[in-house]
Image (cartoon, rainbow, N blue to C red; front, side, top):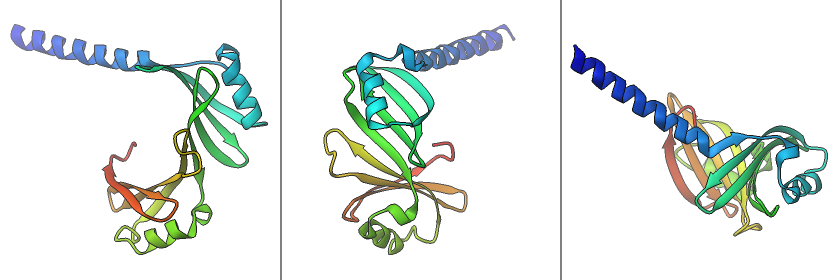
Length: 164
């Protein structure tokens, strides 16, 4: 009995420590607490956006800021460097907004019988003019993420959990 209690305590303590460590990397913040360049980028590149959430994230490479917003009728998540540059931008779009090559490639794929739950256009600082299109598809109880280039080439297909 004592051994069971000790093991349970160790497991619970360890799990609690892991969740505390994970949440320490990312903290919610407010616009007033953002570095001036980050605030300026949000205000100039996303004028009039409704801010849904702001977080400060500690990474090995430094501190990043994520702005979750509604902008021009779309959900936009922007990941910004402390100097205000946008590292990555994910915009939720409708299927009718994907390039025809992506729509055609998906329609011809074996996943086309599933239900498209979400599509995101992902732009990165490294390739700003070459977005990727991430499609989340549900087939029965299974969920998949398909990543296409703008030319319609499938780069990756991954089975994901329902929560992702």
